[in-house]
Length: 244
Image (tube, rainbow, N blue to C red; front, side, top):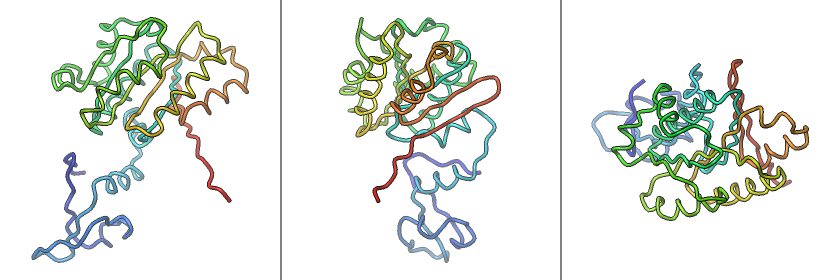
């Protein structure tokens, strides 16, 4: 499969019938060229088409077509190491999509920056290059600062770069569950009309005492959920129904 250069259209030579792209996805105009049946394909349309046919067994491959913009995702994993794998995969998808990447560090993070760096590099994230390009940031959270306020503080400055911002938080521990869910709903509302993809990680053991209705409320406080264990990856997404 040819590489797709960011921020450019791909010229697809040959008939649209042979390309297997539905005609409705041919998003521009016929080009003036000596070659017949030459079309300009909008990059986003081509990526969507390719993603539909992609059945990658890798974590990054499976998540690449899952995340949307905007998005507020709850990520759960069996172990701390698996949470770090989800973080790394999340950022690798954000990197491929040309985003700015930010890890917020608070009391809930647990691991040191050095531990995160080691685990992420082991999972294939090129930290040194991303940091040198100014695309990866570690952002300290202020004491008792809720996530939506921390994000607002960061976003107002980072959004000036014009890139979609991919943000990773850790679930707030030691906070009443009802209050935690209210905070997550506020985060979803804030993300909804901005170029933001947010993922909040929580270790599965922290949810053991959640009864089924609470677990459902936690899912519905977000736009989507991902869950990683030794069995594999599970994903869900809430789909609003059209009126009527």
